[in-house]
Picture 1 (cartoon, helix red, strand yellow):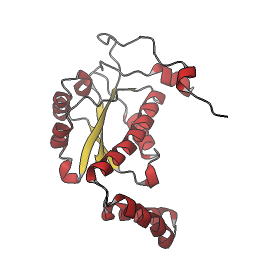
Picture 2: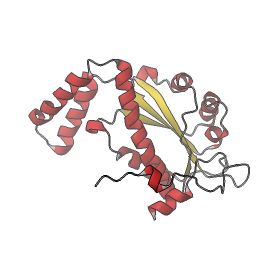
Picture 3: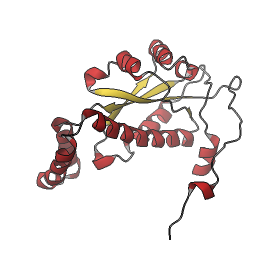
Picture 4: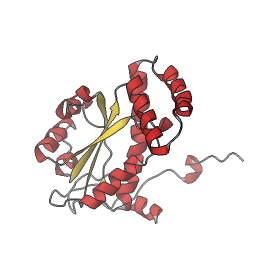
Length: 210
C-alpha cells in the first residue's frame, strides 16, 4: 500500500487554490514529522505552518514566484537551529528525563560528550548538521502526505534570507531550510500531472554486499 501511495505522489506544480486540506490530515502529517528520527534525538528544527494568504503570497515571491506556494492550502516551512548551544542541548536532556525517567547522570554522560564535540565547531557546520535532520523529517512528511493522499512539493528554490525575514526566524535562532506546500493538484495547468514517474533501475540504485 505504501509503494502505491509513493507512486501516486509527485512534485505537484500547480495546486487548486479552492481546495483545502482537512485539519485532521494536516495534524497527522505534523505528527509524522514529530516522530521522524533525528541525531541523538535533538530535533534541531521547527516547522512553521502558514495559511495566511498574505504571508503565503510573500513566501511565493521569495520562492521566485512559484505558484504552488501561494495556491497551496498550507505551507510548511522547515527551519533549523542556527547553532547548537548548552541551553538547547540541556533542554533535550531535561525533556528526556521528564518523559522517560532516565537518570540525569546517565543522560549527562552521553550529552556532555555531545556538547564537547559540537559546541567548539563553527556555527555553519552545526547549522548544516541541523539542516540535515530537518531533511530527514521532510522525507517523512512527504511520505505521510502521500499516505493521506495530500499533494506536496518539496522546495529548495527560494531565497532563505527573505523567508527568514518574512517569518522573523533569525530572532528565534532559526534559519529556513526547505518549504513544503501541501494541497490538492489542479486538474489543468500542471505539466507534470499524469507523467510517468522516472527513477533509476534498482540495479543501478542498490548494491548488495553479502
